[in-house]
Structure formats: C-alpha cells, structure tokens
Image (cartoon, rainbow, N blue to C red):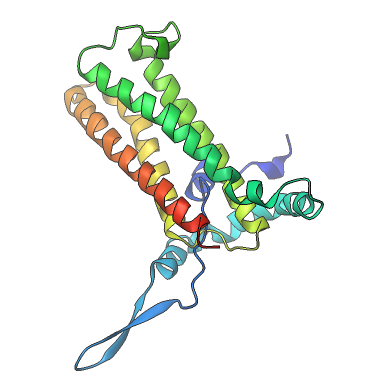
Length: 222
C-alpha cells in the first residue's frame, strides 16, 4: 500500500465521510436594525473556520486521487449521475442497514435480550453481534468519507466547507466516543458508562440521519 494513501484516522474522519459543499455566493449576511448593520457569518463560512487547521493536508490527500476520477468521468467510464450520487447512495445504505440494525441490537442488550440469537446476528448472540455491526459501519463511514471528498473535488467543488462536513465531523466524534465507552463497563463507573453509551448512541443515530439530510440537500444544490 502506498504511504501517500494513509492519513491519520481522525483527519480522514473529520472530512468523512462525504463532506460536500453547498455553494454560496456570499460568505456572510447582513442583519439590519434601527441602529446599525452587522455581518453575520453563514453556515458555510463557519464550516470553513472549523476546518481551517486540517483543510490543507486533507486537500493534499484528496489531490492524489482526484485526477483519476476526473479522467474516468471525462472518458465516460463513470456516468455523471454515479459520480454525483454514488457516495451518498453507498453511505445511506450503510446507515439504513448496519447503522439501524446495530442501534436496534444495542437497545435489545439494554432490555435484557443480549443472549438471544436472531437471523440478523448470523449465529452470534445479539451481545456479540452488536459491536461487530456498529464497528463495521464505522469502518465503512470512514472509508466512504474519503470517497466523498474525492468525488466532490472531482466535480470542482471545495471540501470541508458545508453543514454536511460539520455533521460528518460530529458523527465521527460521537462514534469514536461510543467505541471507547465499553472499556469502562467493567469499572466502578460501569453503570454510568452503560447509560451514557445507550443514550449517546441514540443521539449519534439522530446526528447520522441529520448528516444524511444535509448530504441530500447538498447533492440537490448543484
């Protein structure tokens, strides 16, 4: 594997996931009242400021792969529709299958059904299958996020400048936190860790669906 294809997971994750950009003609809006007029940053400019520290190295990574996809598009090998919506379709399928099933299993464990074996667990108990499925979803989100960045750049759009990028970063941070919390289950604070894991997991799913919504909105914007 080429060394240039590897970046720290956190940097990749912050772009994840598919971080599209909503084009904006203005970086701020004017709020007028009786006394003065002031500029208020739009969500796009706020996103840009959040990612200022990592945008350059992430862009350098994306630039490695973008020419390949542009060439494939220009030659007709990759249809424009697939270039535009392929990332979103792939990530939505992961969320609506592995994400939803994994979250359901998490609550089944909390309700006392962790030792059950169902068709969804493929022979494992729910307790064993839950981290495998959610861990797999997290892996695909990180991997797919790189594709989202490259495909966006290949279409001539900037990266890490939209609400979709911000929800991607938040989703990755929450998933990483969820992955660490089980390490505390066997400690004296295990009960608290389990409660946080359950309810934060539900919040994580809500953020992931918000991420899906911002992605659809971004895709429809250009």
